[in-house]
Image 1: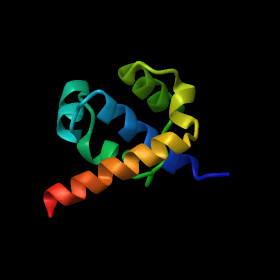
Image 2: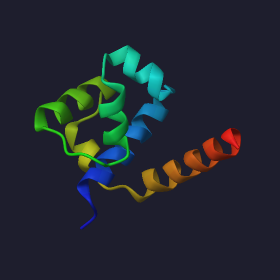
Image 3: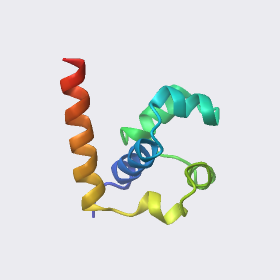
Image 4: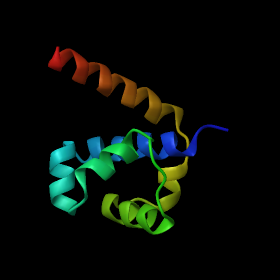
Length: 89
């Protein structure tokens, strides 16, 4: 089984990018803690089920989408991260 925290982080980042929002825009739009959400995206921390439900509502996806492993989302995230690294270097 894959690490559920990492899966949730990948999915959060995927759906945020799908909305076309940077981390800062996302935090501001939904009044989320920058540090907390960044750690969730990196898969560094656990979250309460209430938080999972809130984020699913914010992203307008079923909560199951945030805990479901998708190889396609992993591939998409790797491509996005590679593009971001090229831009910052």
